Length: 72
Length: 372
Image (cartoon, rainbow over all chains, first blue to last red; front, side, top):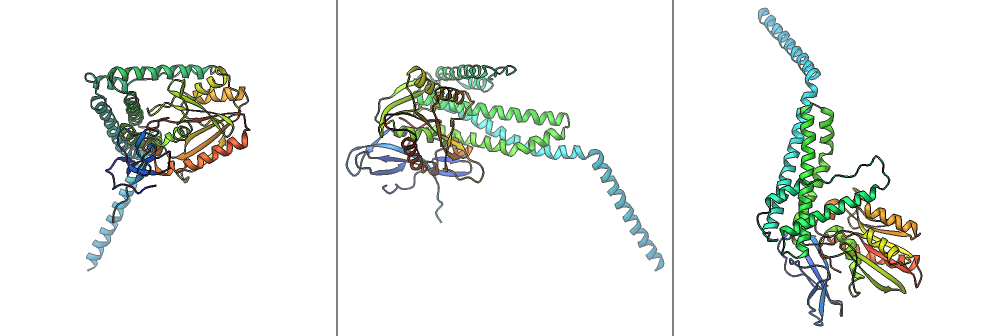
């Protein structure tokens, strides 16, 4: 999985915890996964951007939230 | 000096007598007014919780109005209609003679769902289906919070009116759970507004992986199915139609596959989110037997009826999560369970069926943000 882009804006809350929501785009040809910030309109199985490795069209395979890690 | 000693002794006696009187008086007060004092203390506690519920209820209503006005571009002012909708009631059928009650409940809930959807469509005539479904979900949340607030307020006021300590203390005991559920509901609004998958969507996410390349067909209201080949078996995969926030009618769909399409199924595998018990980890996976589906019970009834009639074994795979996690944005711990679920599905198919068999896989749950 490629490295995440710079920390996205606050995009989700669950109870008192704050979350960043990410979209994972996967290339069906070479298996390359790209993690980026969730954008409104994203949904699982939607076509994503072209693969950065082989240029094929990717698909969104996952959308999930991770807790915001506070920088010390 | 002896006079001073006498005076201090007398003063000491007076203080002691005074304390005795205060003690006796407080004893008397607690005997006579003890319950009223407890009612007052418990009442204050509930009143604070009720205020929190009111804030949540008002916020959800405002979110609904804003969604209809802004994102949904409602025609005209939807506030009055939304307020009317929040007071909408569903009258459940009489259960004195329970035979055939499931059909009646199904009919009533279907009529209600249809009515809600047609009302939302009327208010958002040009909105895309996903926005209509999001609006339906937000209205459902606002309506639930409105109902929770009304019921709690009713028992609070009734308890105060009748000075019923027992009633109030029972209400006070369940308030933390009520607040927890209300908190989960209000937090779900943001997730729904953004169209993000919710924790409950893990079943549809799993199912969607098997549906990507196969042609889709509608088998029941808001429910789609694909037919493909998997390890020499014919695999029927169904889920609610995404990326809208639907749960579909998996019960009707499975019944139709078996009885109308005459597919002799050898196994049904159901994947669903399940509420974890305190102490269990989010994303834990459990296997079991039986129809893994929540809701009011009509879909579960249909699946149990048709599977037992045709002797089709029903296997369940559950992904554990809390109520808050089930209706708010999908957590990574839940998606991390996907690999384990896929392995279990593969094992079940290989171990419980043979080549040439027909297997149905159902991804149960709200499919918001999950296509197919």
